[in-house]
Every structure is written in C-alpha cells, then in structure tokens.
Length: 452
Ligand code: FAD
Image (cartoon, rainbow, N blue to C red; front, side):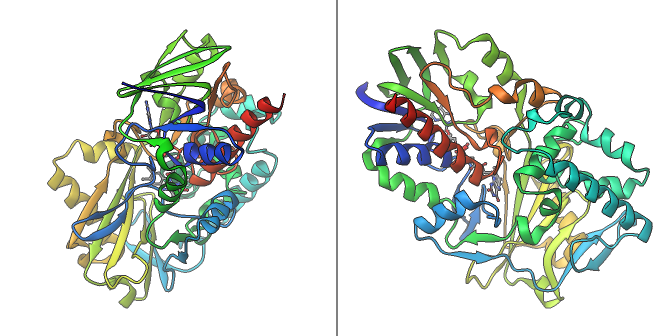
C-alpha cells in the first residue's frame, strides 16, 4: 500500500476533478487525483470501435459554454461544426416523416401557435431564474412541487404541442420521464443554457465538436498533472476531522488537508465516511438520481442522407429515438448518425435481446432517414447505466421537490470535504462546461481558506 501526503486529494479524474487539480497546482498546492477507472475523463470517453472513432460520452459544445470554450482554446484543441445543411425531419403522430427548416416543427398552425405561446411564457419564467440559485426564486417551492408534464398540460390541451415542449428538457436533457421531474428542474436546465429557446435550437445547443474527440480535454489536463494522477484507485474510505483527511483506495492512502469529491453525487454512498457525513448530506444525496439514456452510434459507408438533401437532424416525441443527428467525424468519408433513446423507452428496449434492441432502434432511425439506415457497418450503444463508476446518463438531478428543499446545500463543504461535479453546476448544469465551472469554484474556495 503506497502512502503519500498532499495539500489536496481529489477523488475522480473527470473534467471537474482535473480542472480543480490543475487550478490548485498552478497556485502552488500539491495534489493527488485518485481515479477508479483505468482511464481519465469519466463521462468523456472517445474510443475506436470496429475502426470507427466514437464519442461514447459527452461531445457537443454550445456558444454559452464559455468555461469549456476557454479550456478547449487554452489546450490548443480545434473545433468543427456539426453538419447542418439541408432539411431536418420531424415524425408526427401520423408516423410520417415531414421535412422542415428552422426551429419550428412542421405541425398544424394551431399546434404551432400553442408551442410558440408556451415557449414565450417559459422564456419569461426562465429569465427570472438565476441558474446558480434556482431555489432563491420566490415561486421555487411551488414550481418544484408540480411535475413538468402536469404543468405543461395545465398550459395547453394540445397533446402534440405538450409532447414537443416537454421533450426539450425531458427526454433530451434530464433524461427522466416528464412526470418524474419538476417544473423547477426544467427551468433550471433551460436557465443553465441561457433560455428555453436555446435548448430547443439544435444549432445552438449542439454547435461544435472537438476534432479528435472531447476526451482530449481531460487527457491533456491529466498530462499536465503527470504523476499526480493515479488510475485504478477506487476510493473506499474517507476519514476526516478538522485536521484534514485520510483517503484510502484499493492501492493507496493519501493524507491531505482537504479532499474534493469530484464524482457523480449518486456515488458518494459507495465511500465509507469516518465519521459519517451529517444528517443533511445523508438525506440530500438520496434525493438525487441519474437520468438514463442510450446514445446510439450507427456508422455507414457514406453519409447517404446528405444526398437526399437531409441535414441529419431529426426529432419526434413519438419515436423510440426521439432525436438524431449527423455525427460524422471531421474529415471522415464515412457517415455517422447518432440517436438517443431515453428514460422509459430505454427501459423498454433493455428488456429485449441485444439483436431485437438493435433492430428496433435502427427501424426508428429508418423512419427519419429511409431504409438505408437499417444497415450500418458499425453499430454501438453507449450504455452508461451499466458503468459501475457512473450508473446513468447524462447526469444526476433532484426528484420532485428536492431542488427547492436541498439545492442551496448541494455545493457546501463539510469540514475539509469539498464537492465538484457537473451535476451540481448552475450555468452549464449537467454539461462539461458546468463540470469545469465547479472545478474552478471549488479550487477558489480552497485557495480562499488558505489565505485566511
Ligand atoms: P464524471 O465525468 O462522472 O467524473 C467523475 C469521475 O470520478 C469518473 O472518472 C469516475 O470514474 C470517478 N469515480 C467515481 N467514483 C469514484 C471513486 N469511488 N473513487 C475514485 N474515482 C471515482 N456534456 C456536454 O457538455 N455535451 C455533450 O454533448 C454531452 N453529452 C453527453 C453524452 C453522454 C452519453 C453522457 C454520459 C454525458 C454527456 N454529457 C455531455 C455530460 C458530460 O459528459 C458530464 O456532465 C461531464 O463529463 C461530467 O464531468 P464530471 O467531472 O463532473 O463527472
């Protein structure tokens, strides 16, 4: 068992932990980052599967995500835009594919008017929310007590309008059934991206990718830390007092003045805290749970949809894969589609055999792009639900009522134990940008205590 002493020990080598570690090291503190997996990056993972480079985890960058953009620039990484020429496709309740351009789905004029009316209302409500303190809004408790679905159904009797409004923060973002998330959680998700309209604008929210993959961000951050990153070190025990912490993983013991938990908060209970964490944290952490989505990658010899004048962007609240995009790699002749199967739909297809699941998902993609979609040369499902050190996707959110009840305490340190993760971010919530913001914030909190 290796024993070392550092100023700060960081549990988890995702974007949040590695950002914090770099900030602290730059300020002259000594650090050790203990990572459970045999790689860094956590939910950022770029890998080659059967010859195809795939973004198994996070990949897109939007213009409001300035912390991530600064980091990408600072690391010298190049970005490129998602292919977006041509028509998008919408599958409505009639089951037929309808082409369209712009942000509004090709729905009946009455439905379009309903979507526009409620979108304006949502933008107004979101403008009053501080993403870093949604619980401080005067109506926070009220908005946290009603489900996103129930609130939308109070606003409109138009089922197609409600489904289209719901999925932007539901299946597409929080990846939980819309009856299981509160209106306040939905407003936070929208506020974290600047507005509800931003969330439904695919050209905004899914703007850029990094050439060679977004995992390069954590890989390069880890490179700067050199021997201070320790892989295959799942942390099992964290002893703490006013004097500091002793953190024990499978192969090491680290003594430090402070610890940063830079893992998804749903995993805190995997660590034995000695003494136990206070009652508030025990309660609060149980009200957070992971969303669940399958990211499906289908690679074809050519991006055949482009020849049909399609951009690859496709949506339907009626389809198994509720959204799909052209995800071809930079400079690659082959075409890649990425589709998403979320929450209840994901549960449903995981009850099937792998072959049946693949057939069902590709059939759904074929409803957008035609029969050519049925025969990819590479097919892969990112299943983060089965990953021991993540347990879901994209991230964790509070259950109904949890955000207004506990949100204010989520980022608070307990003695020498600090926390940082995208799942507790305000701006950049549940995104890499939020992870970087939380990494910076926790580092500045620790550096402030040093100055005292
Ligand atoms: P993590 O990346 O989860 O890092 C935590 C680390 O802690 C992990 O490496 C884990 O192995 C480690 N760990 C856990 N337990 C222990 C332990 N006991 N001991 C030691 N180490 C431990 N975001 C975007 O911005 N754009 C996107 O397009 C996007 N798409 C996504 C698609 C998918 C399929 C997924 C899964 C996520 C996506 N996200 C996206 C979200 C984004 O990837 C995450 O919000 C972000 O990467 C989280 O970073 P983090 O450092 O907070 O947590």
